[in-house]
Amino acid sequence: MDRIPRRPSMADVAARAGVSYQTVSRVLNEPQIVRPDTRARVEESIAALGYTRNRAARTLKTTRSSLIGVLTDGSSLFGPAETTTAIETAAREAGYAVLLTTVAPGSVREEEIGGQLLGSGADGILVIAAHEAMIPVVEAVSRSTPVLAVAAEPPPMAGVQVVGVDQRLGAHQVVEHLARTGCRSVVHTAGPSDWFDAVARRRGFEAALEELGLDGTVVGPGDWTPRAGYELCQRLIREGLPEAIFAANDMMAIGVIHALHEHDLRVPEDVAVVGFDNFLGSEFLIPPLTTVSQPFAELGRAALQRLVRGVEQQDEPEQGAPSTLAPRLVVRRSTRPERTH
Image (cartoon, rainbow, N blue to C red):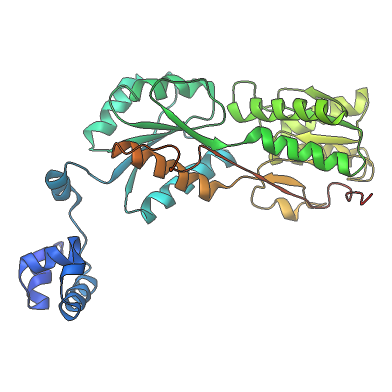
């Protein structure tokens, strides 16, 4: 019977490199004090053996695990899923491991989830708080460990920092662009009323209408799906179409475009359409979709940086990562060209 392979140890690295155990430790923790030729020999042995540090042993020594808990509701929607991926990538680049935990709000006691993450040795917890049902989760876990919420404009929570993308700004950019194309009437097909992103986009839309003097209204809410966009657009077709439709996200924009196509209405000649998120494939729709791109990679880095600063009790907001990140309008052919005069 084949033996189960044993995980290489620091002693194995030391033996292969012909150095002491203490020298290997110095290369791992204070490489600058080790002679370059010795350091190179140890690093070559580490690579050849596939040695990795024992996280549990390091936790005992430093009282920190370099482990970050990430709590989500398990949503597969583009925004929450991309945010989770961005955080995991940023954590790995910063030398942290991620323990991903999914909680369906109300299905279990939030305190139990927090206890499980703390029991695993997590230094802090990031919560993807996309909607109101996640707020009790944030408040529960924040009682016993550093917590940061990734969200757009949630209610204030004592002791909890928040990082998010400026959804109002994104909606404002959409309305400004439509105004520059000569559009005078816009309808916003809104997202779910309990989602912070949807509420912020609606508020940004309404503020931009007032500022720019455009006619507009809000219909919905929808549930982020193409079906919701399709049904809301069918309603607009019956009651009277505007010059442009701003969908709460790209998936709803797909439904809007499909409904318009069924009625032989051209995009953007008859009705311009804008989405939000810049999801994978939005540039391949017919016509390619004008939308708002969110900086998910930057969001992941900013969230992790602020949480780590809190864990290390070195929170200096004026020098830390920004709490609100700016989105970017991506103009494609589902809206008319901007006027130059």
